[in-house]
Length: 326
Ligand code: SF4
Ligand code: SF4
Image (cartoon, rainbow, N blue to C red):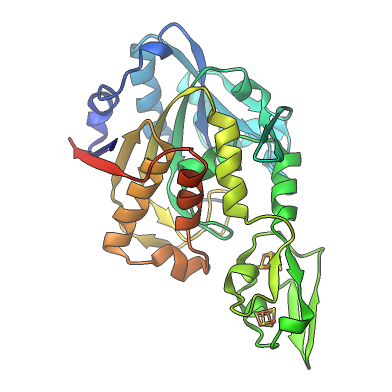
């Protein structure tokens, strides 16, 4: 059983970290993987909390630096300079550690797909991951797996993963029920008078339409986004010592990439620490589910459990965990 440490008081960060062997981090300079939030978003990780974790890690003799990759969509974080500007606006430049944003990557092939892992991440053998748990328009929930699966790869790989999840239409199976058009968050599908049309310009490749078509009339052009997410995470963390902290608070409907991510859909719960990305995401999902059953699925029309199940299937980790409250 994988150990997942549960705490609510930030004063217990050090005690939580002490449950895991950090000896391989000592004397190393290593990435502290963090989504620093898009402009306008209100729910991203709090710099005060991140600062406390960073200070505890510094006491344990390694040197973390804040780390992320540029994004594929048009926003400030698309470029390194813009991302650093956002990091400053959001208060992360005051934490006294370097901020490194990667725009280039190194190719890792896994299960017949290529993933360009951010080059700094690729070249590190230890990583600390701070992941904010929240809803997500394309994956239902975002946690540790999302933090690496989308956040640890280059914008070219992000784009490729979304394109692979676009719908491929089978006219003979379509009943023109219109469900796919209703659930599409980007209004990319139009169903009218026994005609089905898609605007590829508007399609984000989230795969929500595929998941909600009960007739099998649309399938992913290549693979389910949550499968690709689990595989990309594997490519990012393979052969590394990684410790994961999930911040299960300020649980918004949408992602920290989204300026309109609100409202909060579940009360604050806790922080979790584990050395297994599957276990920590499963524990996060279960804790939210206990308070607000199926809330991520209800809000985003996507079952978030898939990324966890895929992760377990490909050997990323185990969903069999033991919660240890401190
Ligand atoms: S949900 Fe499926 S069956 Fe219904 S209109 Fe869309 S593609 Fe056709
Ligand atoms: S993949 Fe997402 S954005 Fe594209 S048509 Fe389907 S629901 Fe809409």
